[in-house]
Length: 267
Image (cartoon, rainbow, N blue to C red; front, side):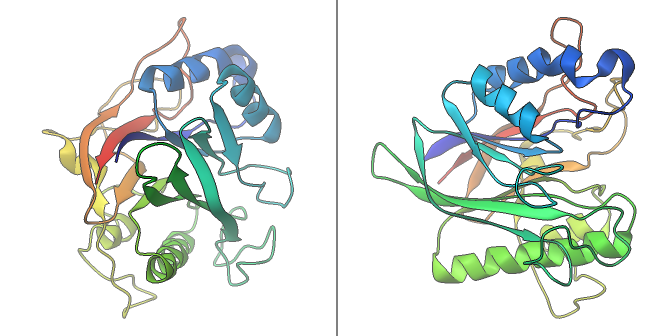
């Protein structure tokens, strides 16, 4: 299979963003996704009305996931997928806390409840290739919450892979720069301080770039000087190519305060 995957923090509505408020940039968000032409978009910070608007404007897409307070309440880590190309075999969601099955739960000094949404997909055409996507948003305030949260995400990915040995994709706003414990762990370069026996070895989509990716969170100011906090990782057998950070404006508007990131995955 060969498909394009995207990660995109949408910047939730309802904030005092002035001329960068959601209602004034929502068309730019849709245009950025259309331009990338992905099969999968892992989104963060989407409220249900935002997600429904995007679904209306992107007629080949559906999305899955619930809010971090349960149901449609508060932010979602929704996974958009091409419903004309993919079918959902299985899906789920858990909270990055000591009670992962409890909606709105949070632990370790996290600023908000945090979630991971996941889905097992099967291609409708061809040989029906299958894969799984995990999409998350780690806490911005607590380093311990980020480290323990990514430990829970990896544990879920590992357990899924033990049940179904399929290619895996991880998308997310990790609120972590490349030299931090979270990203080093995902790349297989170290252990998590709170889980010294746990090891991981995923492939970073930025490895397909010749140079540095630059920043991905830009506060609606643009620019590229800095480090990324938005990532796509894949399991080792998956190849990545064509990775790009989209720093374009559309109609003079930034799609979000984060740049969307895309890559082409093949296996």
